[in-house]
Every structure is written in structure tokens, then in C-alpha cells.
Image: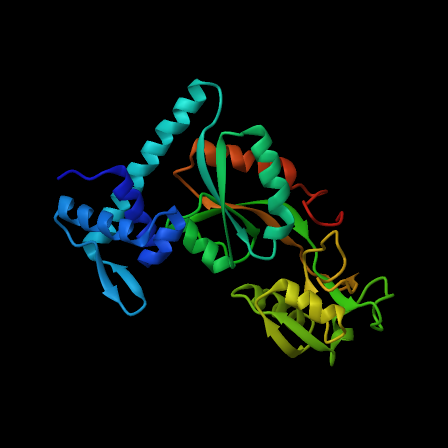
Length: 305
């Protein structure tokens, strides 16, 4: 029995999602179709690819080896599609863009719209996550690129900075600091603090207090940036952020005031994170588009820096 490219694609989907149901949702087929394809692929290759665990399906040692070869094979197949498009004078295919979760609603719409206008035959898949998740997605080949912050970049990946975002203090409109032209971090001592509790991000924000010799009075923690903004807008606490949305109100319509920080703090760079090799023509085109849109003077969805 021979294997098919469809079976290989389903195999990669299961490996990435860890479950039959997750893979079925990802590739838009029924779970039984995925199960049959995996069984047929195991029969064709004469190896067991997965073992069942309480948390889902886990690759066997042989499965991990097959996954590496499968990704390389599919990459070449997709590269052939890219090449055929180039011969016709247009790009074709699919590219997957990751984004840091707090940046996604701000920067992705303009990037996707402009890229679609320039390359209408290319589809973009999106995947949001925290910094450690994006790093894992790149290493496993789930995404081609990520637009994110310059935080804890590992040596095996490449980060290109595009714009620097200075941290600001976020307060409600009636807060005593709302009318200040700038704020020293020490002025936040004692104020209830709303912490964006994402891996790596939390360390960055807490380090701002540490460098200033202040212990934050953490009142609440949340993994959702809009929850942080809503809590701030309603006077429940203050927070620190680096993104300044054009819309300076929380989702409930209450205003948020962003005040510059007077302490000498470095900007946090936003840019493109990618693998150091295996860069497809589609990924290169998308990266070029991002470079044109995200600049030191303009970041989509944000007020001018």
C-alpha cells in the first residue's frame, strides 16, 4: 500500500494538535477520516506513529522521525506550488503567521488586508499565542513567521526588530496621575496593580518595578490584555503596557489614560521572529509586507509613537 499526501498532511495535523478531534477541526474533515488516514499511513509505512496518553496522542520515536521527513517532503511540495505560481507571475499557496496575543487584534488586520491585496492567491492562516507558545510553534514548523516582541529570543531563531515601544502607565480618567505629563514608577507604589500574567511577559513588567526599587501591589492577574484594560478603566487598579491602541477606551466604553514613564527604561522592540533556515517564498513575501507596514514611526492599530 502507498501513502498519499493527504495522509501525510493529516499525520502532521495530529502531531501538532495532539488529538484526532483537534486535527479534524484544523484541516476541516471529520475525525473518522483522520483516524482512517493515520491507520492507513501506519500500515503503509509499517510503523506505529502514535501511542495513546490520557492527554491525547503522543508520537512514538519512529513517529517523531517520520514527522521530520514528512515536514520536509510537504515543504518541498508546497515549494513546487510556489514555483508554479512564480512562473505565472503570481504567488500561490498558504502561509501561517503567528502573533503575540496582545498584538494580534491591533496589527494583524492591516497586515492581512494589504497582503491579500498584493497576493490574492495566497491564503494566510493565523495563530495567536504567548511568547513561549510562538517559539514552540516555530520550532515545530506550525507557523512560518511570528510578529512579536524581543523577549527571551532563543539562539536557534532569528528576530528582526522593526519598531520600539516605550512602556507607559495605564490609569482611569479620574486617577490622580491621569493629568500628569509623565510618571515615575515610584508614584505607583501602593496602587493596586493589574498584572498581565502571560509567560515571559509577566517577568518583563515586574522587572520594570524591580529596576525602580518598587514592589508592585498586585491586586489581580489575568492572561487577557482587554481584561487588564477594563479593570484599569473602571478604577480597580493601574497597569503598565507597551501597546497604545488608537481606541483609548476599554470594551465597556470607559476611557483609559496612558501616561509616559519618566524612568530611564529601554523600549520593547516589536518585530518578526522566524527560523534561521527553511524560509519559503511565501514567508519571504509576507515578511517584506510586514517590514513595510511596521516601522519606527507607524505600528498598525496604535497611536503614533
